[in-house]
Length: 240
Image (cartoon, rainbow, N blue to C red; front, side, top):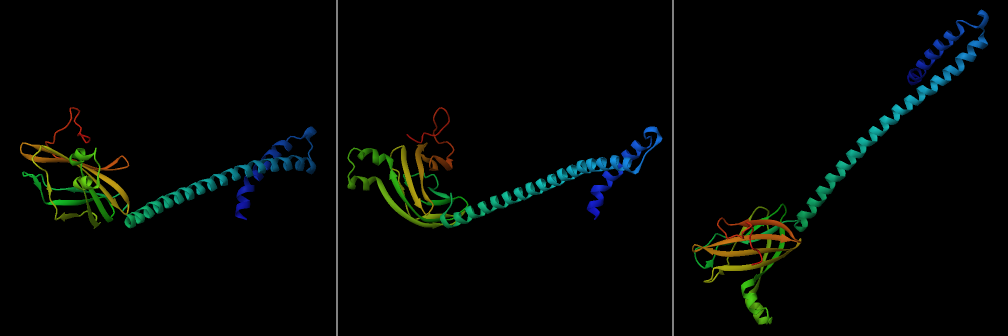
């Protein structure tokens, strides 16, 4: 009832005003009920139609605003759900987490105190690695026999790695009497494979290291020791 009064009160007032204006000075000073109805009826229905259109547009705008709000809320909820789902999958598979092998810069040719360091938001599972000595590989690349490959490659299983932790390894690497060494470390885990490039240079009697971890051409981690030799443009020679 209140809605009807709100919608028809204004058309009624306008139609009455227009009718009174028209019949106030009728032809030859005469007017009748028929004249009143003939003026009031069309005026009332015309103004009512205009008012109804105005109310319809307002309601439509409110509905559209409400639907836009619902759509935004649904999109926000779905986005949050996607993030939570991806995070849950990451905790199961390892997500985009990686790891790298590193240790302190040694002053001797034997590199000890090796650490396997976790990088990322999720744990790593069932991690294994193939460590390839590129300098030794260059020596046998024209004669790739099983025995020769065993001289430049060795396998290690590391198991699971906790977020934000490192594992001390009972391993050592003899860097030899030269001034540079190159290693590629190919990791495999539940979340797929990734590669660590490890480059070693002897500077003023101390071995310095540069390393980065990549997966599908995307770099997840990079660290270069202060004083490590660089190319003229300031970049590290990862291929040399």
